[in-house]
Length: 109
Image (cartoon, rainbow, N blue to C red; front, side, top):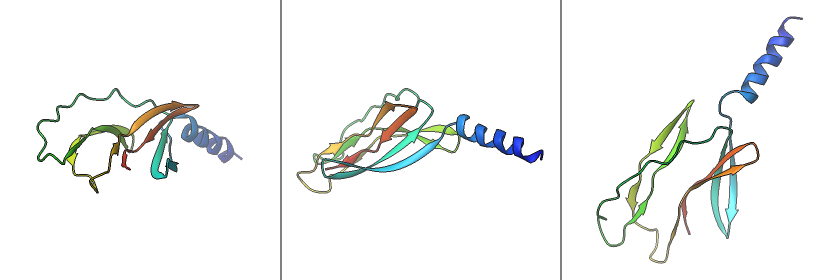
């Protein structure tokens, strides 16, 4: 059976090669956010200039690295209005964890 070694080699390449992604829904202090896990370290964040806010209500949401297929893509920051006047924005963040890196998406609380 020659196909078994090829199947095993293919599974090993899929598991240990490249960047594996796993998505998990996380609850933090009553808010729901999404954790995205990768085995590959993300690039260093890019410097951004926010410029002037369109209005006094707008909040700057900084950019972040996202994964598209096999490559990292920078998602530029943008101005956003809060969903209500008491809302605060919790920025997204990367955390190194056992076996890889987890990204917790930013969210309003």
